[in-house]
Image (tube, rainbow, N blue to C red):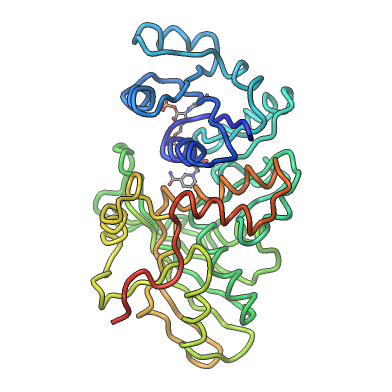
Length: 345
Ligand SMILES: NC(=O)c1ccc[n+]([C@@H]2O[C@H](COP(=O)([O-])OP(=O)(O)OC[C@H]3O[C@@H](n4cnc5c(N)ncnc54)[C@H](OP(=O)(O)O)[C@@H]3O)[C@@H](O)[C@H]2O)c1
């Protein structure tokens, strides 16, 4: 049994904690969270989560609120094999020394710089590179979605060049202070955006250029891709490959799937926890092939896509399980799908 601690209980931390709880080979020992708010209260009463404060000074707030608190971060680190850091982007870098001094292995998130860890990780691409490492970084939602897709295309057809435009959700639903409310913002205004170089930390040598625009929505990114393949192929062959690729699903506008609103809706209709969609959502309608050029749209649920990767990263650094076995366990426990999830029109 792998003993896991989670540091941070926000968008990513709460999901990672629940995903750990659903693995038969892992035990969620506890979660570090500064604020004893309603999320903490729900986690304690419905899920039996054990909370720890970041430091001694943080214990008082929990006691005053009347919520159980089981010690500090240092106490939790003494009880775990692996810690998953889900603190706000940039903070994890400062936590690394603490994790290092206690000997636990640590997984960081995409908001940290690549040099926070020995490996930038996407399970389908480079699980083995993370095996037995001390520090691993699960890359951002956009990078994860692009790495899954472009790695599969490269393996099957070769990728000579990829040109990607990312339309990014501006904020997560609870981030009320972030904008824009009524604008589209080139973000960053320079080209390429940081996503391409980040992608190359996972798929070295990939010839990719990325451009990003922030849009006033809180759920899901949309990627538009133009990919020059290594050889000519057909639309049918690309759809066939995508249909059998793990963690990628195909949807179509003809079956009612027209926008990112449907990504959210489908998560609700499927009864997924927090309406989460862990898979790349590729519009089959958009898949077009012209000689060696392939064009398509995909949507990425930013809050959820990195959750399977965090679970696989835990196994990669803490066990001898193979990539396939780990992903099988993860996908079965979370109900991750692949292929066409609705009848083709
Ligand atoms: N959100 C996304 O869509 C997304 C997608 C992929 C990757 N990521 C990456 O995942 C990481 C986390 O992002 P997020 O969106 O989950 O952030 P978030 O929702 O703001 O959650 C951050 C959590 O960290 C806690 N925290 C703050 N300071 C802490 C400290 N000193 N010790 C322990 N916990 C502390 C916060 O506590 P309180 O709740 O008590 O305030 C909160 O629970 C970032 O690197 C981000 O770039 C985010």
